[in-house]
Every structure is written in C-alpha cells, then in structure tokens.
Image (tube, helix red, strand yellow):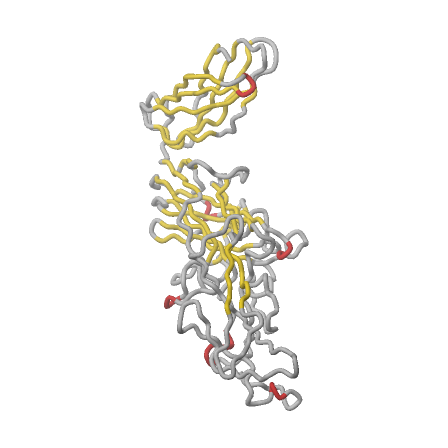
Length: 463
C-alpha cells in the first residue's frame, strides 16, 4: 500500500510502502511476505513489523487435557544483510473447547440422556397458524466454557437489535485486540486490488447449527427465533435464513418469524428428511454486562409439528458451532468449523393411533433400604393395539394404616418407548418408605398414543 503521510514522515512519503500482503504458497503452514524493505532503526532502537490477520486450521489438533495445545509461530527474515529477529518464536493461540452444546428436555430442567418419545397425535398441527399446543419437545443449550472469547460477532460492533443483522465496522488499528470479533484488522478504504479492502473481514459471526436427521414425512421442526426467554432487544442469538447454496455460511439475513402463543418461532429448512436451523451470535448486552465479561448460556426451544397422516420415525439431533459449510465455489468461510457428527438426542415420533392399549403391571422385585426402596415393575401390553410413545406419567404409593404415605423419588414421566401388543417392558421406581409401614397400595398412571389410560393398581404389597 502506498504511503500518503507527506514529507514530515519519510517512511510514509508517496512512493513508499507501509502495508504488505502475505501469501501462502510454499507450504500449508507458511505465510510469506515478499520484498519487504526494512529501514534500519536509529541508534540502538528496534524496528517493529506488525503481522495481523493470522488464522489457523486447528481441526486436526487434539484438545489438551488439562493443558491446552499451543499454536506456535516461528518468524525468520531471509535477505542480505542478515537480520536478527529478537522474538522469533511466539505463542499465537491455544486449542481449547470454547463452547458446550447439549440437548435438554422440554421443560429445560435436565440434560437428555435417553431417547425422547412423542406421539404424532395433536403434535402442534396448527403451529404455522400461530397455535402451539404442546411445550417444546426439547431444548438445545449453548454455553461458553471461557469468558467472552468463544462466541463472537462478525465485527466489533454488536447488533442494534436481534432483527437488524450484523453490522460491519472498520477495525484499522494495527495489533489492536478485537477479541469479541471474528474480524481482525480490516480497513475498507484500502485498494480493491488483491482484495485488500476485504482483508481480515469475517464472512459472519459465530453461528450455531441445529440439524435434525431422518425427519419423518409430514413432520416439520420449528425453533425459537431468539434465545428462550429473550426478545429482539436482548437475545444473544438470532435464527437466520439459511442459504440455498452454502446453507450456514456467508452473509445471511434474519429468518422470517411466525408469531405464536409460545413466542416468535421460525420454521427449520427441510430438504428431504433433513431439517436444519442456523443461529448467529448478536453480542447484545446481557444483564447490563458486556458479553466479553461473561460466560454466556443461551437456550433454543425446538418444537415438532405433525400433520394428519404423518409417518412415524426416529429423529437424530445434531448441533455444533458454525459455519461448517464453505462459501459458493468452495471458498472457506471465515470463520469455519468442522461439523459435529455425534448425536445430542434422539426423538421418536410415534404413529397417531386413536385406541387405548390394555396394560397390566406387576412387581418383579424389591431391593434396597426403605429410605431408597427400589421396585422393579413389569408392564405388559395385553392387547387392543400397539402402545406408541408409552409413558409412565405418575406413581403414587399409599400406606395402609396410620402415618405418612411413601414418597416417589424417581422423576416422572418415565419414557417406556413403543410397546407392541403382547410385549412387555420393565422399569424401576424408587420410593422413600417410612419405618413401620406394613402394607402399601401402588397406583400407576400411563399415557400411550397421546391418550391417558386407566390407572393400574397393585394392591396390598409388602413395602
């Protein structure tokens, strides 16, 4: 870049150069800056050359535990006469896990550790018209594991609001730390030759994708437009409209919103049996504190909708930081992440069957002290029809005689999965039973095919 400083500073005089573009040509881990003139400093002083906008592909570097692996830069100068670099080796960064992403249940109370069973019966058929009939089927929680350094906006400017899109600002002070931004040194006034006016500019802020694989026919997925419980004024993430070419990469616009009784929702884009949603970090203030001062946590509520005659099936849920796709033509998006293949949840959508199966329940064993008494219960489908999305929705144990009734310690509902006619399954319930209890009565409540079933009673049992 030509200097324009004038005669008061000969190093910036017209015809001099003060900015040089690096190139990666000789090796994948080498950046060269050719033909850089080095004016000797005065006396015993030192000449500083500032290098900006270095990025590393660390997808192949393992996470150190507990000490993170270090990205090291080695600088050298090739020329005549020889030039000594006083700090030729520097630590450029550390490879750490900056974001944790997990699936949580519909009430957002617990991490999902077992398959989630839902029935297609009454599964939000009118969600597109603004009517949500059920709680979320699950949540996706995104939480930083490092203070203010994992989720970043496109440039240092936060969004005016979550519906405004990512602003682009100039960041042209060399070596100024822009830790809250995916963009490094960026000066749009530089010449367009060689793309200098775009150098350092990220294509997007940090994003999060939620992918649902193997979505059954007739089933669609919806997600909260903002972080659960937030609005456009304070949501740290916003659902974006995926690109038809590059999916979650490149500049995207906020996705159109459907206002519902459960709040603003966006419909996930569905291609074949895959549905996906993309969210971008906005950097909006949280609790009066700047995002860089916090380890932020945000939740995405996910709803399923089933139309009449929808097919049953098991949905595999994946999520991770993004973008993971390249730009059009295979150009790397800045930033770019590696797609996560492991599932964070499985959701089984059962057929909408309008009959009630005939269940029976029996105790097969009891173990443990009275304060942590474990009962093994065998549930049998004696016929009538298959039980889709069978759940144990309640269990009450009554003490026969005087004193307090035992307390159920096992959280409900308990998902028992689909149970075909003639089949059996076993579940464990834990109770706290008062000392001196002689006999108890156990009442069990079930739900299948979207319908509440008649309770089952197990009478006059020893505790």
